[in-house]
Image 1 (cartoon, rainbow, N blue to C red):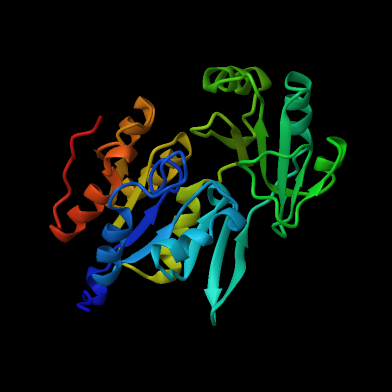
Image 2: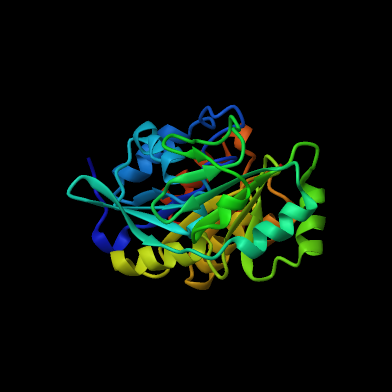
Length: 279
């Protein structure tokens, strides 16, 4: 295996849904092979996702990567691997009661989940898309009894535009929020996103500031795009991303169904950033 010199390593942080994975949770074409090429070149390949750690760690094995850090829960949780064991290295929390009350009034039939600092998930109703191993079903009132690292809301019958309107009406300006590609609302502590977590990881790793590559497709990736570009790195939006996400990125690749991430990762070998034709 040829390993790049230390000062040539890139920190490569990848979103999961809509970037690594198709909507049926199979891999985007060419991604495992492209990730392997980046890994074997000596780059530090990791994941930065809105998913909880319980819903994330299996993709490290699937991609055959073993990073020291993984960013979860839209930056509120950073996991670290020490002596082969994963620990919750940095966790951000907030008091969810105000947010829950605002949303509960407007979306009384929605399904709600919170993630505690320990990683345990409390939820009001089961949802197939949620990883709830070790979770506990509780009343809506119990969701706000402890500080949380995230609040997730899914409301059947509401689409992404409905969520945007509800966020505005509810005045959610004291927390950070993102609307996922499957139209759910994910709320994190104020000022916390994937970019703030990756900045902390980057500093801990002591890597060159401009050798950062991030890729994603959602509004929850805008923060890490901004951070990557501020430090002189690369930010790649997937071709199916909303226009505001593409506008926040420095480059646009093909959509996830067309293997856009694999195409973008392979440009690391050229050492030359480029815009790849997007959808």
